[in-house]
Amino acid sequence: GEEPEPLSRGPRRRGRDARRRSPDDSPLRDGNRDRLEGLLTARAARTLLFYCTETNQHLYRWLGNYINENPIPESGAWEDISGETFLRGMLQGEGARVIPNVKANNVDPLFDCSPVLAVDPRQVAQRIMDVRSQLADEFIEDLRILKGDNYSLLKETLLASLQEEEPAEGDEGE
Image (tube, rainbow, N blue to C red; front, side, top):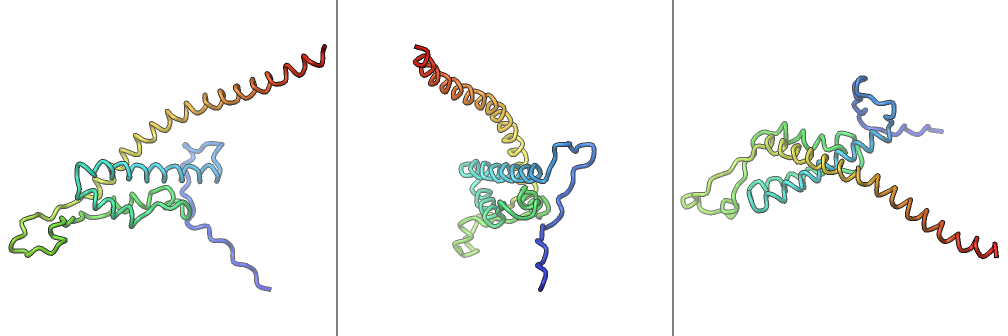
């Protein structure tokens, strides 16, 4: 019979250089790291988009369109999952033009005095990376608290199970 085709794994993941490699690195850890980077990138883009709702409607529209046209997937090549493709597209993009709503409504050019606005995708990408760094710092703080929360939960359940057992032992002894 025919042999099945090998599964395509997509592009090979870039390796960390030897100085930065940890003995604990594994494909699962790399995948988790990529997914976390993608989550942070997506949340940073959405955070910037939210800020633009009140401050810059033109950037809001441009960024909203970019996010919808270039989603960060949950599976696929590591470049896509990590959000690198999303950011690289902006960093390599040239200046984009945003046409105000007035122009979109096909106003006669003779009476149109609204300017065509420009968006610099590189600056937007830089802002997203800045927000992503801030979110990562906040997550690190939250994850440090999680360790203590785990210990508290274990302690509470252990104490509750010991308290349930004590009266039963006391009854047997009488």
